[in-house]
Amino acid sequence: MTHNPILITGGAGFIGSHLTDALLAKGYAVRVLDDLSTGKRSNLPLDNAKIELIEGDVADAQVVAQAMSGCQAVVHLAAVASVQASVDDPVRTHQSNFIGTLNVCEAMRQASVKRVVFASSAAVYGNNGEGHPIDEETPKAPLTPYASDKLASEYYLDFYRREHALEPVIFRFFNIFGPRQDPSSPYSGVISIFSERAQKGLPITVFGDGEQTRDFVYVEDLVKVLVQAVETPQVKPGAINVGMNKATSLNQMLEALAEVLGQIPPVSYSEARSGDIRHSRANNQRLVERFTMPEQTLMKVGLDRLLKNLSVK
Ligand code: NAD
Ligand code: UD2
Image (cartoon, rainbow, N blue to C red; front, side):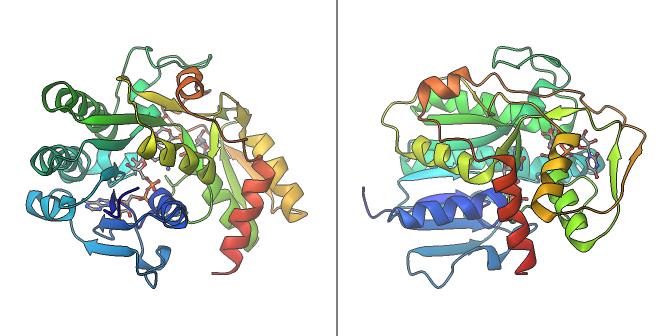
């Protein structure tokens, strides 16, 4: 291990701050580049001498080049993570979600940094593959600016791999959950919304019959994979699904929430969201082949940690 820092763009956010904790615990120095648009300083242990926060925008090529200088690897997480925000303002989100990636690639080329781990999304599949575990060869059908920017980012990372010997590890995350996920928008992750409302005793609304399923991944399990992706000596081309190949319905998730809390407020069922995907589940064979999979954190255990974190706030 060299003393050079790992750059985490978006490191003050939900996933990035957990990754920061894990890398610091392993003895790495971490440099975070974040504009704090949704990320928070308070997510980071800034009293640790091994962490540096640069407040800046990944859409600014100069800032990215400065942040890249002297780094040994990059984990590129910075993005407007809300799909709805990309629908409402495609031009602004494109700056963060696509230009940001291009700036990271260029800064890496100039600074001779090779390894980049990238957060793509299951959103690139659109409605394709619904009803069975989705593998990576499933035709792509990006339905939103968010998904289009993620897919274009993947293609550019692959171009830089072929032309400039970058070593991209491209992950398509399914539904990640855990402490520090922001519950404040109606389009936030469903688990963050339900947990916060349940803890405050506020009624919960399920869109549809609650039998829709998702492949939920606890954030610490994801982080164990991200750390390996930073460290692995060999990188093969091709994006990798990050899911557990396990379908959990919203009703099952609510049962787990009720078990952890003892009881939950009234749950009502309203019309399904238009365009909502009924079943989303990852075929994770590629992930299992290339990485050592952590033992899956059970839904109840993950919910318990999330709720404890909410209650100390
Ligand atoms: P988050 O909003 O908590 O984290 C994103 C971070 O990026 C925030 O700290 C934000 O301040 C920062 N950021 C946004 N725009 C920026 C910019 N222009 N310059 C610098 N920093 C900027 O969301 P998250 O859930 O932690 O998402 C991390 C990554 O994972 C994102 O790329 C997201 O698209 C991807 N992802 C997340 C999920 C999920 O289930 N959470 C699923 C698929 C993909
Ligand atoms: C996830 C991602 C999205 C995109 C998409 C690709 C999140 C937050 N969203 O959307 O970015 O990648 O996958 O397929 O990770 N729901 C309720 N009540 C609520 C909120 C949600 O019933 O208050 C339902 C919602 O209609 C859906 C399910 O919960 O059926 C999950 O919703 P979500 O927004 O957490 O995630 P998803 O899979 O729609």
